[in-house]
Amino acid sequence: VWFDSRGTPATQLNAVLRDPANQIVFSSLNMDDHGPVLLPRSGHYVFSIQGDAAGSTGGYEFRLVDLSQQSTLVMPSDPVSGTISPVGEADFYRISLNAGQRVVVDSQLGSPELRYHLIQPSGGFLVNNGDTRSDTNTIVPTETGTYFLVVFGSGAQTGAYDMRVEVAALTVTPSALDASMTGAISTPGEADVFTFVASAGQRVLFDSQLGTPQVFYTLLSPMGRVLINQGDTRFDSDP
Image (cartoon, rainbow, N blue to C red; front, side, top):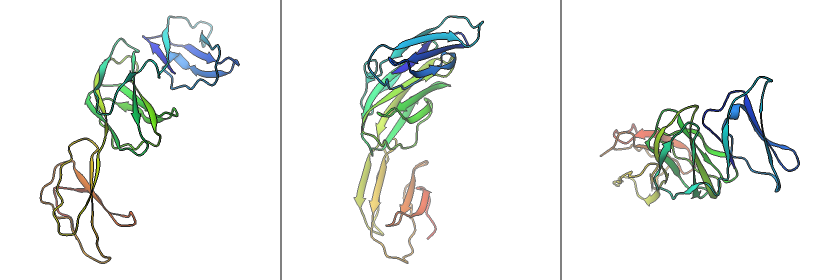
């Protein structure tokens, strides 16, 4: 579940959720959003809202969101778009991902201080407080299952967003020294891998025939040692 505080609540008001055994599940200072929270047991839960001082007063609005029921199902590459308005709104999505996949959050449109979390099935953050205006680097999930994407405004921020959760392609092609290796990176996070056989002591260089700004390459040894790290595909390397 997710504690979704709506509007602009009065400061110095705190929310506390207790489980059926009267144990504190979570507390939210100043009615800030909080989650995800895994409810520990079945039964009647109790929310209490109180001021942190004798003179603390004011209004509030919140909801406790069942993420599995109140989220929109999307598939990889589907548009994830909407508008955070009014202040305090949060939008919820769910998507199935597999451990070991190469994933990129691809931003199409964002607003300053519009943020998002990408939450793992176990409740941890795969992306914590991501910026809706920026793409991520390639992310590799470690869990298979349903992930939740929560989009929200920081403070009183509102605005529009549009993003995609892309599963990046990984293509492995056997090749050889002196052979032409060509291709195109067509989706965010995509990686093309070429393998070849070489002998210890050989002197080789990267001979660029065509390159693209912000498209890089890495050369690895059979043991995984990095020989060239983030080389620029537009330029030749030294031997």
